[in-house]
Structures are given as C-alpha cells and as structure tokens.
Length: 287
Length: 139
Image (cartoon, rainbow over all chains, first blue to last red; front, side):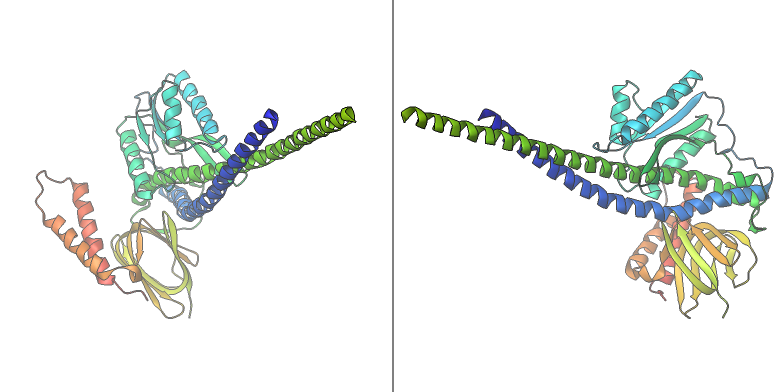
C-alpha cells in the first residue's frame, strides 16, 4: 500500500514538471521566433557595412586607422563574455563559459592581464564563483537596443584608442542555424580587414567625401554592428537552446510518467491478487 | 518610365524596398538627386529629408539621420543610422520636440560644452525642425 501511494505521489510530481517544461518550451518557441526575426532584420545593415568596409579600404589603398592598429602595449586585454540572465537553456552557458575560460587561460599564458566584463547574470555568477570578479557587468535583456550597444562599443573604442587595452575579445554564442550554434571567442579590436580589402572593389565608385574620410566613418560603425550582431546572435541562440532543452525535458518527463504508470498498475494488480488470494484462502479454510 | 530599386536599411530594420523613378536625399554636403542609370557612388549622408518618387506615381518622405548612400548597378541603398517615415510623425509631438531642442541650443550651461556635445545638440535641433516640416507627408 505504501509503495502504491509513493508511486502515485511521484506520478503527480512528474506530471506537474511536464506541464511546466511544456509551457516553458512554448514560451521559448515564441521568444525564439521573435528574436530570430529581429536578428534577421539586422543582417542587411551588418552585411552591407562589412562589404563597404572592404570595398572602400581597397579603394583607399594604404589604410591606417587607430582601430586597425594595436591598442598600445598596456598588456591588458578586455574580454567580454555574453551569457544569459536565466538558466534552463541546456549547454548554452556551459559552452560559452568553457570557451571563455580557454581563451582567458591562453591570454594569461601569454603574460596578458585580462580585464573581464560580463553580460548576463549567469556569466557574472560563474566568474564570481571562480574568484575572477568581473570589473563590469551588463544586462541587456531579451531585446538588446542598438543605442545601448552603440554606447558600449564607443566606450570600448575610446579605451582601445587611448591605449587602455591591447585587444578586445568577445566570447559569445554564434547562431548558425536552428540546429547549430557555436560558442566562440572573436577579436573585436583591433579590427581585421575583410578579404575584399585585399583585392579590387566590385564597382568603381565616386566617393563623396574621399574614400579615406568615408572609411574613417565606416570603421567605428563596423565595430558597433559586430557587437550588436554578437548580442542578437546570443539572444537567438539562448532561446533556441532553451526550446530544445525544454522539449527534451518534456519528453523525458513523458517517458518517466509512462514507466511510473506501468509500475503503479503492476503494484495495484499485485495488491488485488493478494487480496483475492486472501479471500479465497479464507473461504477455503471456513469451508 | 525607367525605374531603379531603392532600399532604406537601419541597424535594426529594413524600412523600404521599392522601385522608384527618382530619389532625393540629404547628403553630407547638400541635397543629392538620383535618377535611373546613375553611375556608382558612395556618399555620406547628413541629417535631413529623403523623398522617393515611387513607380506608382506616389512619393514617400523620410527623415534620415546620418549614414551612407550607395548606388551600385541599378540599386540605391540608404544605410542610415536612423530613419522615420514622415507619415508616422505626430505633428504636435514634433512641434513640442522642436521647442525643447531650440531651448537646449540657446540654454546657458554651467560648464562649457565640448565640440561633440555641441554638434549633438545642433543635430537634434536640425532633426526636430525637419520632423516638423515633414509631419503628415506620408505619401
């Protein structure tokens, strides 16, 4: 009897969990669709800016810009780790933080001093636990605004040009497709020129003002859109990974529920059989 | 009538993708017009108005705020930092914004503003004035 009651309690608990994970899966699906649409809407601008940087650089010839050169010899490298604010998103935070740790260790092995910035509560909590307290922490939420990211990028560029950092590295999750997201550490500064900059521009433009002046304006924009893209990709990846994790949890709960139901039926049948045997045995003894 | 493709793209959205017969917009050094068959150019944009004459005969007005205009092949792309459809501008709100922007320009600050801050305030004033001028000019 005690076993049956125990199984029944577990069945109720599993059903409740299944209901919660199913709801979370549906919420994650809705958020994923919205964030993917937002990320896709930012692509044309990002792609066009990058293409223009390559073409204008090729036309400008010998390019020299503070954002392309090394940021002094301070020995400091800024590492921005983009994690999530909430958990239950599978291996999302684990993969990003592992990639960040590998990069940080490599930088330290080169004798660099790492200055850590984090976005998202999970990344901050992880580094705090590792006793590597980040110098700054940000929370941009599910909808990072271009204005906010632009302000952050401007701060990084100013610090880099002033020689505060030799390098700025972003550790985040890149969204490739619904089934593929890659945790990577990408160098934001100094900027690396796109491949097209090596060859000839695809069209012979008339520049207004000159190619050099346009490039001076384009390069900071390129940094801003790269950072904005990283944040957008991170949000999309987080939502898709939470969606997959919650689907797996719902499926597991469903499987566990079936097993418990089978055990419950078996225990109930055993109890009925025992009771019948007792009745029959009692009747036989009286007769 | 000959047409060419015109797109307006902001960092967070694509605002327009239409066939147009003529486009005019605020470049860094003044107003610039583009007709079909224009040669390739890349120009810096200023803060001002953009008018696009659609193939249907209508015109659409936008407030644009810096960026680049790229003409390549038969396509004009306005990569703007910010854009607003004139039809969506609230005239009353635009007027209030202009009054505030004018007040900021003439206000005396306790500490002198640097060049960047001064430029930002003047740019906001310019944008506010254009928004008032274009308010309601949807099509």
